[in-house]
Image (cartoon, rainbow, N blue to C red; front, side):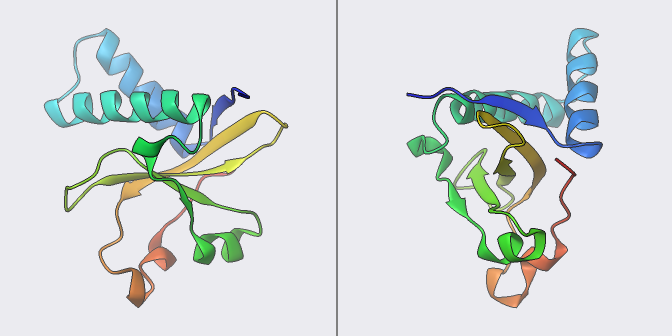
Amino acid sequence: MMRFFIRLGVPEMLALWNDLREKRSSGKLSELEAQLYKKWGTAMKHLAENPLHPGLHTHEIPQLTKRYGMKVWQSYLENRNSRAMRMYWVYGPQRQDITVIGLEPHPEDKKRGAYDKVVLSDV
């Protein structure tokens, strides 16, 4: 199976991950930040190993694919939670790369243009 290199979109995703890592190493993560760091780290590990890992529930988001002109995928960081975080990503820029371009709570109502509010980082 092909293993992927995980990149983080700039500037938002890279800045957020670096901030969480710095706070973790200095012992300054809040409880919510610690949960996010752990869940996001686990999700990125699964994504690198297998983008279709069952726990990720990966699926394309056609509204975002159309808006950004490339297939945009959504994977779960968690499930069974009304504010469950979702990770948005694309393949590339290189053949074995996946770039995480967004991290947001699950849209409240997919039928009312909720994905119109999602703003993604650059690859």
